[in-house]
Image: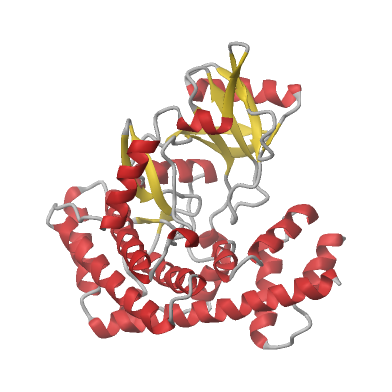
Length: 409
């Protein structure tokens, strides 16, 4: 009842068509949430326009389906009939660092929404995220637009390099961060962050507020279900709290293995693309995400497998000791935003094309996508549409903040 009341009141103090549409979309995509999780998600969405954006991938695709966000005409059916896997939630905080052994690598790091689909949907979402993050750090709209222009040119060149069987390079910002992480981190960094050794036994930190102890019954259940996938003896388990934004309401556990490796066991659900009615997949949610991470991530062993806990599907993946991503506070200038955006474009192109296993098809598709991005006027048309949509999302965020402020009085 509380949830229904909260949803019915959402933003009703304004009556414009945009607000009414957003209200219906939130009702449609978040009605499954418990009242507590729903309130938490609204609060997190209110933190900034970028947070609102991160938490509402299904709204993005619903807007594409309804032509509220319109792609340039020759971008609308890319990858047909052979579609690469896409991020599905492409933005500047879904790229970051992980590792292959002790080598630090950069690439896409979130695959919860991934599936085979039109790569231009990733392009537009990346452009929108550039606007929102740029606005958050105080960069003027015209400068953001220039960054978006350079990003699409870099994306075009990256596809062209892949078509030639060459590796497109990342920017200096990425190389410097790889050097820092290589110096400061080690294979036990995840253990040192989340766990400790007490009386000769390893365990999760007892005073870490983001880790919640489980009942002995649930502990035993998770041990039994996950140990065959982990391939190591599990010595501790905890529920991971306050992680992610779009996935608020989904369960997440951390497992501590005997060899001091930490695994994340994360509940998976139907992707935003499917919720919006754009694309369907026959894969189960956990199998879909696991397959995506294996064919798109820089580290192909990122997903160890899948399990079911109380009939819910979960992925099991290693928590990288070198995991790190950029927040707005890490970007000190428009130059930093530009370098991150260009590197995100390269990472996106790499992931798209790495998902196409047939080399001839990959070469052909890379060349086709590069040619599609060749037209300057069409690139600018896509940028204008993506930035305009992001501006509207900023207004939607302001409406949410106003409503939450009024409801708190």
